[in-house]
Image 1 (cartoon, helix red, strand yellow):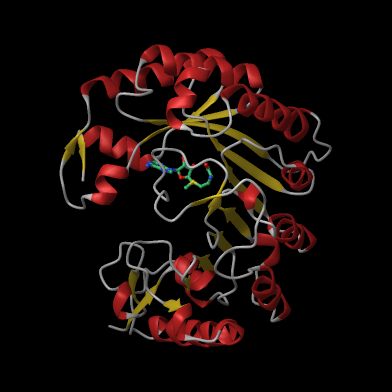
Image 2 (tube, rainbow, N blue to C red):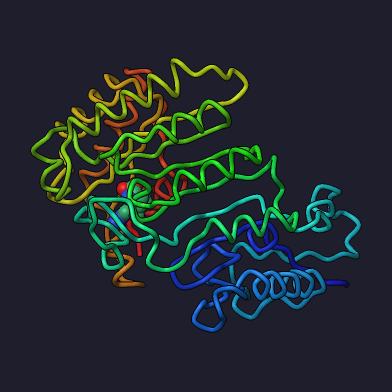
Length: 344
Ligand SMILES: C[S@@+](CC[C@H](N)C(=O)[O-])C[C@H]1O[C@@H](n2cnc3c(N)ncnc32)[C@H](O)[C@@H]1O
């Protein structure tokens, strides 16, 4: 038996956070380069070298210790004759980057009360450089060294608020110049960004906007800045320019209005129904229902029962989206939590 290991994200992913570069999006954080341990100008080279070594070791049967036990690390037996050609191809594919998560900036113009990033965020009202490092030169290095699978690249802008990142436009442009396959923009929707529209006219895009309310009053309880009507107007503009008036016919764009259930604030049928009606009116093609994960993030391992009325809200979401002709998206792990009845 010749044991080998493979992880898609280790081979093809990059995650830029304030204090490190990672090849991982999972809680294990296998292969992490902490930026405090290297000079900034050497970071790209050191990281790339470690990345190569780790990928080789993993392929040769010795995964990174932090990866052991991770659900994304797959073990295969090379002597197994039933191993599919698809898997073999995947294992031997050159480890070019095809997934980038951008999370190195924590400036925000909103600071929603439930935000999982809350403690890291810094409230500002004008675009700023990241407090941690500029990403553009690093992305340029990855392209210059031909380390990116350009046409298959997916990029996720997380954050912080992209509207408050001064290199946001330049970063979007470099991905577009290199014909990225897809760009995902997380936004609070307070500020309309023409760069998003430009991107949607050149490649596949998804705009994920956490609205979380169906009325101006509830919006105010959750968000210390901006207002419900402006966010819905901006979503209507994205829907118009990215969906209806989009000159490319080969790509696909989703304008996703999202609603996180926050107990005691927006978890009523009337509020959720108003949100869905407003989203349909704005012309979005996708809505998403999610749950607040603060409790489980803070108190790891503690068991929380799903409130009974959440089941009615999820049913309402399914019924109402079908009625309005909207694509109603629920993460698979949320469906799993609903089936179990608790999360921890
Ligand atoms: C941290 S935000 C940053 C991007 C941007 N500022 C925004 O508002 O979308 C990224 C995503 O995390 C989600 N998120 C933040 N806090 C959460 C929580 N407590 N539970 C579930 N999702 C959360 C938001 O809805 C958003 O879609």
